[in-house]
Amino acid sequence: MAKSVSQRVGILTSGGDAPGLNAAIRGVARAAIDVYGMTVIGFEHGYRGMIENRSRVLQPSEFSGILVQGGTILGTSREKPFKDKNWCDENGDPCAVERIKETYRDLALDCLVVLGGNGTNTTGYLLSQAGLNVIGLPKTIDNDIVETDITFGFHTALAVATDAIDRLHSTASSHNRVMVIEVMGHKAGWLGLYAGVAGGGDVVLLPEIPYDIDNIAAHLENRVKSGKTFSIVVVAEGARSKAEAAMDKKTFKKARQQMSGSIGYRVAHEIEEATGLESRVTVLGYLQRGGTPVAYDRVLATQFGTAAAKMLAEGDYGKMVALRDNRILGVPLELVAHRIKPVPLDHRMLETARDVGTCLGD
Ligand code: F6P
Image 1 (tube, rainbow, N blue to C red):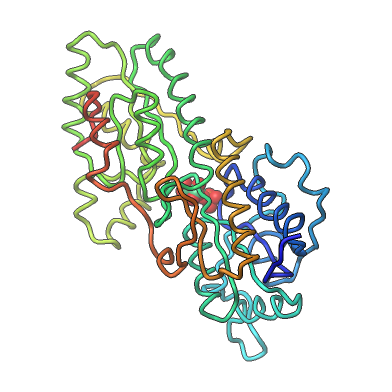
Image 2 (cartoon, protein in one colour; image 1 turned 180 degrees about the horizontal axis):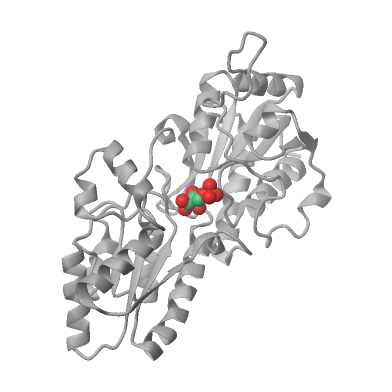
C-alpha cells in the first residue's frame, strides 16, 4: 500500500447536484481507501453535515454501482457557513464556521475534500484560510468555474438539452412555430451556447451577449422569407437584453423580480409582439441535472477523484483539481474563490455559431 500523508479524510458534496458526483465520490474514496489506506468520512448534505456533525465512515460496499447513478449518495445543500446566521453561539454570534472547525478537530481529519461549484470552492478556500486542509473538485452543469477547462456534469446537461432541442424540431416544424427553449447555466452561457450549436439553434441568447429583440425579429423574419417554416430559439437562463445590460445591478434585480415568468417566456412574448410568429416555450429546468451521467462525465469525475486522492496522499492541500490542456492538475483555491467564468467574447465556439448562421441576438 502506498505511503500517505493524509490518514483521515472528510468528504462532502455541496451546492446544486450534478451528474458525476457519485462517480467522483467513488473515485476519491476507492483510491483513498484501496491504494493509500485512508479512512474516508462522508458528511451529509454538504457543509450543513459538518456544522451538525452528521457523518459516517464510508464503507467500500457503498461505492458499488454508484458510478452510473445521478445525484449524490451524501446528499447536498446550499449551506454557506460564512454567511449563515442561523447558527449562533451563546452570545448570539454566528458560529457555523466554528462548528465546522470543531467537527474537523473532533474527527481528527487531516483534510476535507469538497465537491461543488463556485460557492463550494470559495467556502473551501475560506476554510483553508481558517486553518483547515482542503482540496476542491469542480462540479457544475454550468461549466462556470475558473482555472479548469471543464467541470463534470456539464456534458450530461448538454446531452439532455441537445436531445430536447432535437425533439422540439419536429413539433416546431409540424406547427410552423417558433420554439423557445430555456436552459440553465446561471450567469454563464456555456450550456446555452454548446446546446445551441449541437442542436442547431437558429437564435442563441447568452448572458455574455446582450440581445436586441429587433435583431432577433429580423433574423426570424428572414428565415420565413427564405422558406423556413419554423425556428428554434435557445435562451440561457441568464440572458439579458441590451437595455438590461445598461442597468446598474440593483435596477436589474428589481426589473427581474417584476418580470412574470422566466426569461424564456419574456423572449417568446417579445418575438410574438415583434413578428406575429406563434411562439411556444419549454423550460428544461432540473431535467438537466438529474439522471445518469454520460460517459464523459463519469470518466472526468473518476479522474478528478483519483487525482484528489493522490493529492491527499502527498499532502498537496489548498488546491482544486482541474483539467487544463488535457492534463489533470491542482490549482490554488485562492485563484478559484469568488470568481466565475463567463464565455469569453472571443471564444471559438461563438465564432463557430455565427459561421453556421446562428443569430446571437446582437
Ligand atoms: O448551478 C447549477 C444550477 O443548476 C444553475 O444552472 C441554476 O441556476 C441553479 O443551479 C438552480 O439551483 P437550485 O437548485 O438552487 O434551484
